[in-house]
Image (cartoon, rainbow, N blue to C red):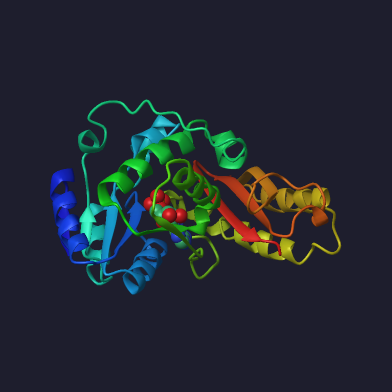
Length: 280
Ligand code: AMP
């Protein structure tokens, strides 16, 4: 496992592998790694000859400056966790390396970023597209791995790949959870003890909601989920929406879509958590 920080080094090394016919798998992350990240790395290792993990806390995707400042950074622990994962290269660039000058590109994702995270975090997905397109340009992967935990991000990345006519295959990987059901997240490290104890209610509620499709309308089910979570004093639902998996547009009635996903964002104390479950 080799740690690299300059664009020219990683480009040179990867082009040598490419010449030898090796396939390249890529896992972009913002560090503070956990077993959710590692599941992506393991999938990449099982499918690609050479695996690259990037660790870069991308400032342009943070609409909230204090969120950026407080975002957990644990580089030594990250490298330790990656050591046994089978990854070949860790790419840890500086901010200047990625943004030698401000990135002024504006992406048009149509309706995809007008809902959920896009609606509540203005500019977030434009920043995601900026950094992921730059990283794709540097790594030129055959495959790139993303988690379903950030379901809307997956849709945005797929759309970006189409718009920029990139050759990379986007692989989506299931959500990895703690034993109490809470979706693993770097931000879980920031939860105060009492809030951490309340947080599993999010997934418990979503799982129960899945069993209520036959008895409740879409509107009633949304109301039930929001009320059930808001009953906990540490949790406040920012949004809970049932959307079509492809268009991400909200459904009004169950027959409106053949593949429905329920996506939620919850304020847990000072921390914002997201999660989702499939409904059919
Ligand atoms: P992040 O470091 O938060 O930018 O996440 C890097 C990648 O790991 C993204 O593709 C995330 O969707 C994915 N990821 C984060 N948490 C999980 C999880 N609990 N299960 C699966 N993938 C995850």
